[in-house]
Image 1: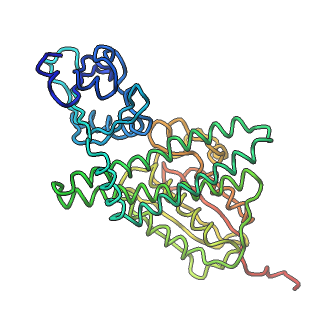
Image 2 (image 1 turned 90 degrees about the vertical axis):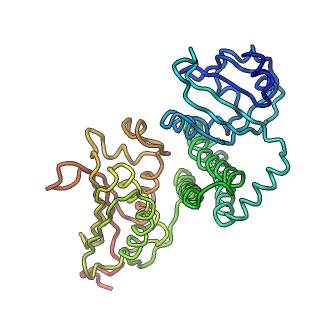
Length: 394
């Protein structure tokens, strides 16, 4: 770096296409407690704290790749002494004349840390419902993790299951929490200069991530009980159509333009089940259908009496199941190779649906969408009727 850049009060970096440091100024070295020349050749992510690294991998770098620039992104640097230094990142794609550099970055220290923390709390109060829900969900999730860990110590497959579970927690929990944390910080720091449209978008992002945490925790609670053989549901007469309609309304607000259609058989009988569990199953199946089918396509739901019970079928216009074994889809932590490449997920939603359906003496299935569709998938479940059989002597 030139002497002129060494007097700049912010850290300046140039990075190559693999995000390794090409050059760093004196202020950048001071931010992480290392000599600038020692940073050269190091991966940029290695200078970040764990939470900041996840945020950078999942949100910042994709945005930089797509738009060629990011502005005022809150990150924390990991210093050589083990401290965390909060900074704001601005980065742009390098011009061809910049030589080996692919990106240029400026990192500015947030000096008034106590003020920043107070501002963050103020932002949290403005979003009290979302943040309070997130904190409660995080506490519930931690309790679930403790229960799982203790119960599986003596079990034969403890290590395999625990490693997979920790992998889900580290990504699926940290990603939404990091997003909520980062978006709250951005709102606090830049609220006065942001348009009302952009503020609404950021608040919607926080609400969506909070809802994602809520759903993940609900699924993990079922997972913990099912794995310990302690999943029990209270069975009572339930109207399936009302629960499915409620789930459809919720998914329609977050589905990215999918068209939801419901065809319910008039006078379908009551089923023997639990409202909370049936609602959770419906949300998972509808969410899956929307997630793996193109935006704007139709998700069709049919409800009809069938073989002494009621069948609910959710059909999408996605790529279908291909050569996959349908039963494999309902195994815990399983995700098809194509799904892993294209969509984020924990691999527990369909497992949770299966366990809840079985707990209500029902059955669940996955298959290709029925004719005349030439693509798409159908996920459905059947629950027994709450009404006595015609040949019941009692």
